[in-house]
Image 1 (spheres, one colour):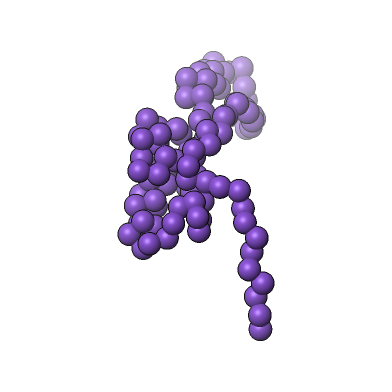
Image 2 (cartoon, one colour):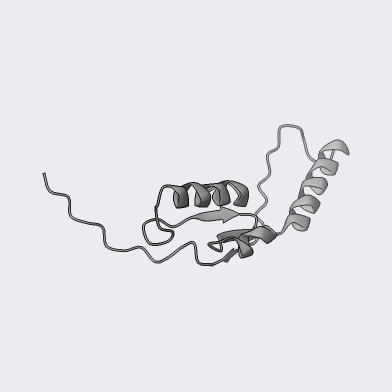
Length: 101
């Protein structure tokens, strides 16, 4: 699982250069669902987040702090929905080989 799609796509290129099949040997997942994720040589499984909702929530929290509705020491958790977009860079996990001593 990569921090974002850009890193995941670079990982796909590196794995291809090393001859590591994706998803045959390893699955790769990104985050952000950027446009290029769907059109990559191996279309990338990724997590889509609500960027507009994220911006609105951040602005609301900041304004609450600036306007004194929230004390400076108060921490607040905001959970926003995400959606997993499954594409060809992932597969169901296989059976791990038995390791012999």
